[in-house]
Length: 118
Image (cartoon, rainbow, N blue to C red; front, side, top):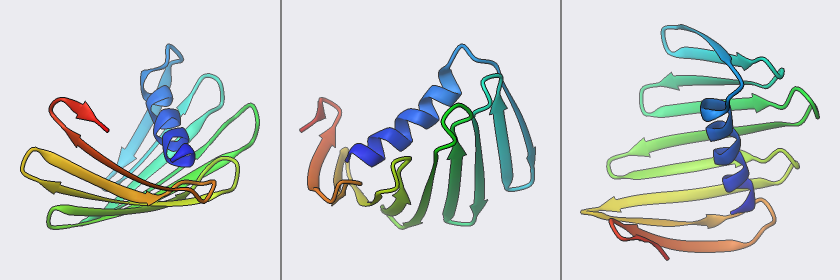
């Protein structure tokens, strides 16, 4: 889950950081770069989303691919430290079930609802 959290955390950091980001988009492709040299791209094709990001300071990069079919999303990616991860997210009513393997090879299973996750 570490890689997944790192990828999601990096994306959130890029989106919410006080660093000013400049984004351009064309159709289904979007690319953003902030004033610290970090960048990420998002490309969407129907039910598939491809994301990549780069850290301008360290040169590390990450990637994430997801496909949604009905109420289930399949994700896989590579964390900035090079580990691969995967996750399946299934939404049933107000409950979300997440299972997968983090970038360190550890399996996880989480259930989330309006009261939080466990």
